[in-house]
Structures are given as C-alpha cells and as structure tokens.
Image (cartoon, rainbow, N blue to C red; front, side, top):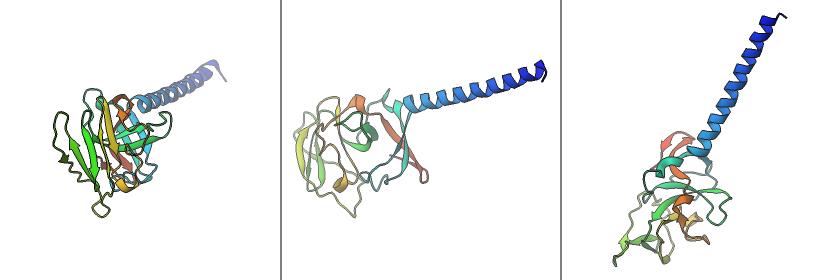
Length: 185
C-alpha cells in the first residue's frame, strides 16, 4: 500500500468514528436534557394511555410556564426518587384543598370556602371512580396527581409523599408514538 492510500483510509475511518461519536453524544444530550422517552408500565392511565405504550415527554415544558391542571406528567416515584418513572395527571394545584366523594373530585380554591366539582372528560364512563378521599390541602410548589384509571392507580392518594414537588416533574407528556401516533392532552 502506498502512503497516499493509507492516508485516505485513515481519514475515512477517522471521519466515521467522529460521526458516530457526535451522533451518540447528541442522542444522549437530547435524551437527558430535552425529552423523556418512557414505556408505560401499568394500567393506571388507561383509557388515555395503555400498558406498553411508548410516549415522549418534553423536559423543557415547564421552563417558562407553570404546570396546569390535567397536564399528563412524568415523575420519579415520590417515595423513591431514584426508582421507576410514573406517568400521572395533575389534578390538584398548589394551595387548593381537594377531596373525593363517591369518586367525584372536588376542589376548594385557595381563599374560598365552596367546593366545585372537577370536570374530567378523560375518565372511562364504563368504570366510574368509586373512592372517597380527603380533604387535603396541597402545599405551595406541590401538586396532587392521579391516574386516569382511578380504580386501579397508585397515585397521590396512596403514596407516603402525597404531593409532587414542582422540580420533581421531569416533563409533560406530548405524544404517544407506539402503537400508532397520538397527541396527548
């Protein structure tokens, strides 16, 4: 082999190694700082999201905006922050008092004394919630979250750390990409 040919091979291999390295670095950066890619481990969000569905959540959703009621969020297990990721829906906001009577969620806004029933169009009408809970007042900078499948969901009603701290929300679920594509709301 002549010297020119070896130099060409070296440059070609070096170019591929550089491309692979930067591709992996970009993918890792994107996955750790921009999105959360998750597989749904349980039926706690059924009928909205099914067991085994794959979703993407956007980590920067709450950089310039506050979480809103009914956002679907990804968070670490509140009782073991290094553990499994959960996906739940924000039901109670900071400062509110929340209680559940015969499966209906009621909210008492901060500074008010009248409870308002919470309209939740995403619940399965064929399996209405059957629980009672509360009342409980949500501290500032915390949220109360529940699964859409209320009769089969480990959520704020059952955890030792009932409230989810704002900074522990990893991102807002944007879409399901498997099976099929669906925008999540």
